[in-house]
Length: 77
Picture: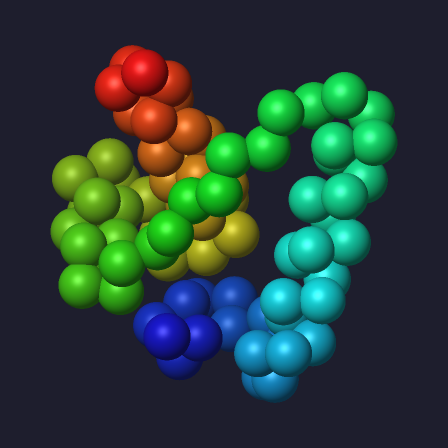
């Protein structure tokens, strides 16, 4: 999946390293009282989602997608 991103060099090539960093960030947010919603990025749907919004496949798009996904999860509650 990493290869699809324009900023792939900014993402750890090892899944375990990426996961460790993501889990640490999640804990930091939760310690500050921020509710964390996990967003799963589908490698088939994400490029289409970005194209529909005029976004590059990069960190900004991943952040926007995660925020959009969290809002969608909130609507289904």
